Image 1 (cartoon, helix red, strand yellow):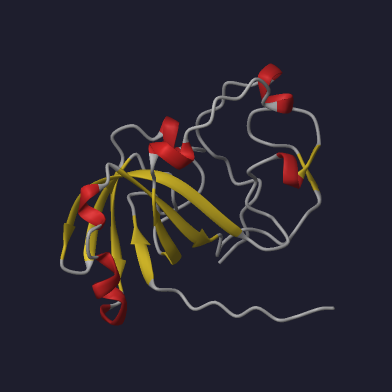
Image 2 (cartoon, one colour):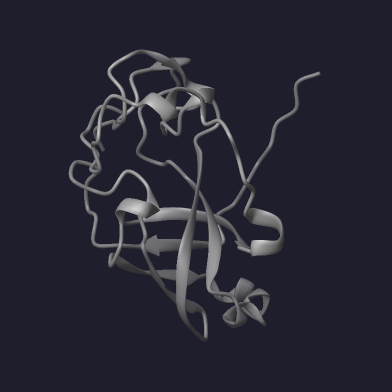
Length: 162
């Protein structure tokens, strides 16, 4: 059965990254990069109690990603991989997520750190990052355990012209 899913943004993410080329490819490579997350006024009440968390998950739309591809050459490798074994943005449902540092909540604006998101990105949801739930010890990370590249910044291989 095929169903339509409609999502409306709850805000917009503002960052120093105006284009994908040169931006960090993951939050771990975005140390010190700060941004603002503007929540639309009708959702501001939902920010209550969020300021007690060090990190939050931002869930957003890869609004400038090229169309979906099932195989990609990810930033950290030179081999083609299945898109679901990567974090490439050109997914069938272009949804991204980043665990950013929450620096401040003031009214309907959050100041965040270690952000790896393109400026103007539509925000779909926010979830608290909780060490009790979000920190798992793992033994294997698939092909990433032997990644052939140390690339920390994006190029434009997954972007579409706007």
